[in-house]
Image (cartoon, rainbow, N blue to C red; front, side, top):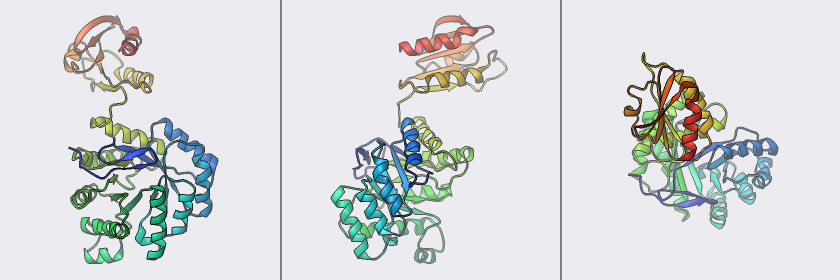
Length: 348
């Protein structure tokens, strides 16, 4: 069961336990380069990114957000470090969220200015603590980087906002270490009821990072922890979104596309199963049908092993079977398998 949290919005996108879990990414363009940033966000929108974060290193970048927002549709979160004026300018530019640690942007008066501006515009603040950004005080108190120093560092920022009567807070406590990340979120989930943004920070290249992130994020989501996610990969942010969405689909938390299941092949396989699976995936990738399609390598076990699928094919020697819910509906030649399968999918 999903953990119960407070709920609020980034623009029109709901965050919290009463809303679907969202997938975020972050642009890797120079935010001051409006054209490149807009182009990347539009590409991310096409793969169903829910929320996008942009780096704001200076006032020029903060001001650029105003023009960027005119050309995109998804909520924008401004990523701010140390300078409260960048937060204020980003708010003026129309951002729907801030990622900022209030203890790092100056004295109480500066924090109050930011909080007031966020209250006026109903803008949530995400507090983000990574294993590499823990306050020295907590590193010394808790003997280094660990669950306690991570969580306490985050809670210091939370208390600053709570003392100013601000509660539209999202929290993240990410580490490159999966075990530390999971335990930190578990501890945090028992302390507060704010929505949690989860991920494995600096997880690595697309291949290794996908595996590492899937284990960490998937483990937390399976426990009911997590309201918005980011898969942090070294590369194209579009891949982050694709992986994030697939993690949700694999856990049954998102049912928006065709799910393809296929066997690993064995000595009975008489068709080029890998090629067929790839071709079918390409053909149905954009179809928004919540159905399960099975592609099996042999007609001996195919329909039986995949009887929970809505539709499927099982290859044979020159021939193949098309089946629905485990029942064979037709036999076709091998060269017609994909064509007939797609025809049946479109009729569902």
